[in-house]
Image (cartoon, rainbow, N blue to C red; front, side, top):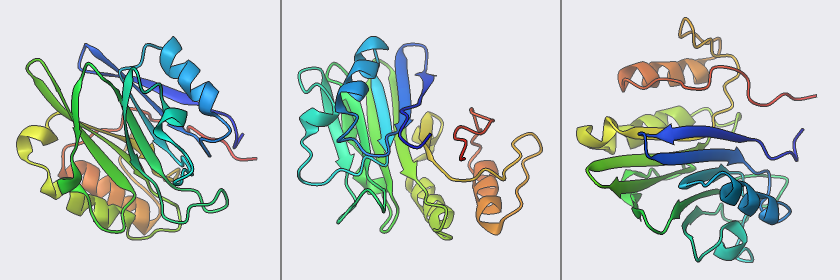
Length: 200
């Protein structure tokens, strides 16, 4: 269902817990998002389709006593058009936005995480199904990232690529074949292999 909040869990190394969700609008899910991050003792959470604008304060996205909030709102975003990204990170983590790895016209945001001897890069991407150039832009962003960070990289998001068969790394459409190509080129792997959203 489009309005349900589904969280996918993952671990960053052995010490950090990462969550991801397609919010389909933060305004109606503020309390639900905060409850999920508190209940799951989340260190980092990444969100797509926040549909946030300048009327949405960071405090609606996360408890500002506990989390730093990084946002990339889509200009003129409305519920009908979707869009918008957010990453929240616990304040006891050393995090900073890595804007140097961004690409104009790509709904992608990177945050660098430094914890003890580990440096990782967490990214969130929203790739609308109608954007035929999104993965070419993603390739440009990945090429900007230094090799030492490429080894500790996690990218989550809504890729809209249901036609990919991750077992044999094949895809039917040119757009999604490009994602498979990038995955191979940068030595990435797909953690979630099934369909995460069913449409009626």
